[in-house]
Image 1 (cartoon, rainbow, N blue to C red):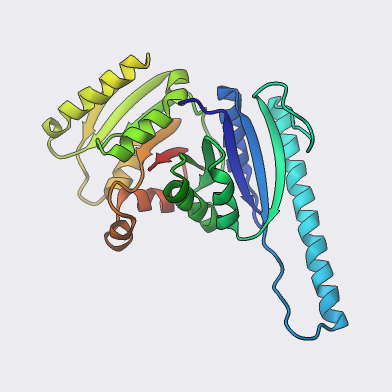
Image 2 (image 1 turned 180 degrees about the horizontal axis):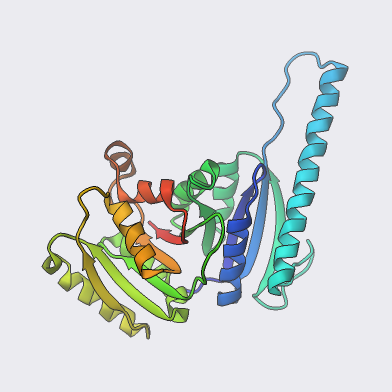
Amino acid sequence: MSIKRILVPLPGSASHTGEIELALSAAKALGAHVQALFISQPPPVTRGGVTVSELGRTASVAEERERTARDAREVFAQACAKVGIPMLSANDEPGSPLAASWREAEGSYVETAVQRAAAFDLVVAASATVMESLMAIAEQSLLQTRRPVVLAPARLQSDLTDSVMIAWDESPECWHAVSAAIPFMHLAKSVRVVSVDRDASNRQASQAEVLAYLRCHGIGATAQVVAPQEMLSVGDTLLAAGAEYEAGLLVMGAYSHSRLREMLLGGATRHILKNAAARPVLLAH
């Protein structure tokens, strides 16, 4: 799989430094096009007669939305200029894949982002520690479009291509994540496959299979099994392993169990969606 179109939704009420940095970093590494989608929510619908003061408030809200959109566009344009990615105007056709564009839309943050997500190879969002709306966008993009999603930290601390850690559980979802991350792993200095299990022998055969798969793609990797710690969930154990390995990118399958089961009983996907904050996480379903 190649990654040549990246969508970065920007719900209009918050700063999005981490998502913008990560999206542009990925685009620069992969020679991809980034589209920033600035989403503003429509004003509440008034019913019955509208007073002059209500009209004034509506106009003021509209002006504030326009001002926020202009400011956000300027931040995005400056970020593009800083890393040397050309930003196209509305009618420009890209001369090369490496470029950025800006689009504005009005509507529900999640619905609007998910409608666009299917037209892209990768969606950049974030966990709930950054913004609840971005977590919802990530989750619904995974479930509805089956596009891979990268959760961005609030601030990008390391290079995406320094090292990649695969959180390996041999599920179909994990295989999808590995396939989606191939372009990043081709650029990585090192790749490690990590499974969580009390008995390492349970994972030997499947880890050997994924190492063989990666070798066929020209990627060398090492494998490791870590025992779950008594006071930590599987999600926390994976995040701790990523920190120990200083992973520039953590790769894992999403919702290998049903979403309802994970919501009721807990699970690694829900934990990562809620808590990933220190490093980027690529998820695929």
